Image (cartoon, rainbow, N blue to C red; front, side, top):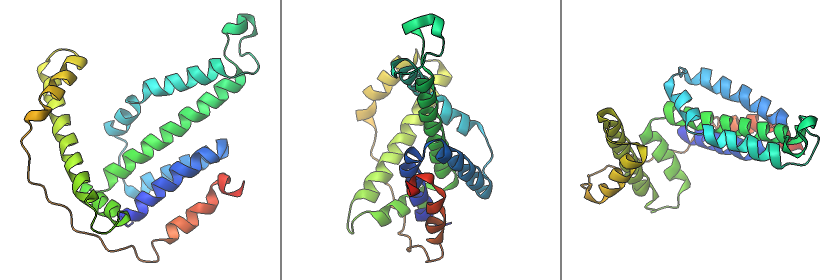
Length: 208
């Protein structure tokens, strides 16, 4: 599949999933599983890492919706200290949506080479834009920062905040590297656009 079509499919899912409710989440899970199988990507530690990074956000969604949404008490004996059925349902729905988007983003990044992804995004940028160069520089900086953090963790240098502070303090000392902007891609063939046309009617939010 053309990298641009992958990017557009992900963006389409990100827009339509919140509009489709619980049926849309079921469709999204099936679509994600289908593309995961098609991409032949293993369920490795990277997927768990993507979910672990948002675990506190998921918990906060459930807590905020559960305790601050009016409705029937989940535990009537607790009175005002109890979460509500409606709040827990809404919080669970938002948490499931975030999980699907996080896994979709992980699949897109792991199944698409970085050069192809940058070239695909460059097709969406205005002509003669410096967006591809800035994106490559950002990805290079993120990669360098990630490697330094991993080395700091391996050496046991302080706690996480100290490691982050040390990384920010050394940010100005990074030596500029020569980077190459990936070659531009050709636009997808018309058959590739059929993926978007076929996937659009699957989302319940389209028919509302």
